[in-house]
Length: 389
Ligand code: GLU
Image (cartoon, rainbow, N blue to C red; front, side, top):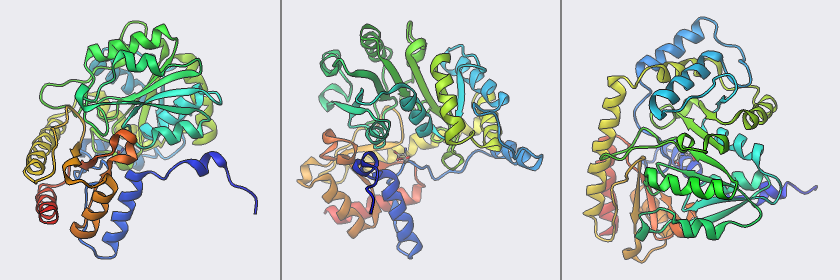
């Protein structure tokens, strides 16, 4: 039999998607699983967005769009960038519709990486970064995020990771899995390092609106000197509970965007047509009261769930500054993150993600999604407590 692709063979399956699939299979078999693995909120997409997409599909918006996306969608993205991020973007040359943020990141990596190039990533980081960099022919260089530094990089760490092969920095803020939201000072440091070393920066901003307790997201591309070297991957999956729509966009300098569009022509032709129309309705106006209410509800549930986890002996967890996740320190239990994950599945029928799958520095933690229904969260707390007691 001929050999398969070495690049693909060497990457690990996605623990987030893989465990969520496993939970779905168990549910189909009748098991009462509470799935806290993938970051999928229990709420549906707000009605006015669904309505816009439904109207679109009924009125014949069922055809392929331009590879870079519909003009209306790209204009709505530019309105959103100006209103929410203080950035002026040209919808014709600097924005592309993508099928979710992961696809935006993939296009960004394929457009900027040459074989052997290094990309600096966080450790722990979102489970797909290392594999996507590998498939693009590059090498992920993990730089630790330490709890004593509030899961932030220092300038010394970043500078220490740069070699002559470094091409880009890829990071996520608000951060999955630790919940860190980079302050303007954190971003200025990253910008300084990128400019001084002539690096691209790829930013994953999918959690931008879900920040808590006064923390606020800042877009790196808006900092002086950064627009020309930053590719911002943005989306609606998390903030508007639109995970199943597979729609997002990337904002990049024209010369990079052109390359991404070329790839899009070959990979997908374009993002979905009526999903772009629905997403445009979400971006055109500031978030409506029903969306704000949704975020407030999540804030409350995250606080409630994390308080509950902290009452269980052996578990320690800070409320995230942003994002959906509890990053739970399990070191006092003496179990590895995989052992804890297996135990919770086997004995409590609760699925979580082992910290080690986010990188070496994730060992000693598990990640739990906190934006599930109140009933599921209460039941999960009670089952976890029973098992760990
Ligand atoms: N991004 C989410 C997570 O980290 C959803 C699953 C995925 O796309 O990997 O759980």
